Image (cartoon, rainbow, N blue to C red; front, side, top):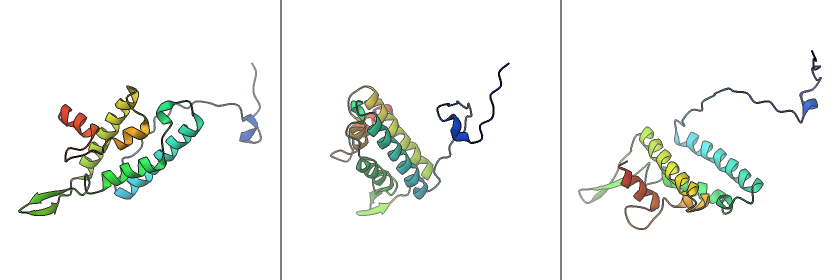
Length: 148
């Protein structure tokens, strides 16, 4: 039986990696600032992936601006602070935070489906929530067709 000596410093075994099977679950953001922080971390992660894997065409045009515009869309006056006409005035409607997160999840799900089918890049998918007219863009139509 071979026994491996315990290294005096953890970096001594720099080339050895071990996989831990811990199933830690993240928490959903409970406020808009937590949401901004979590999506900023995700954006940085995707940008690192894009710089590492330059041959992946669906990561080629990804920029921080795509994520920032998506965050501004979700937290802006089209989703989180939506305004509806009532008696010839614009009245702010504040949907529940859980509903906003559910809608945001559905937008990202539909965007990832577009990328997986090869219809667009990740940067284009993040911008596809926009569109002309009150209905929005590609993703609004896809969500509306499914009855969300």
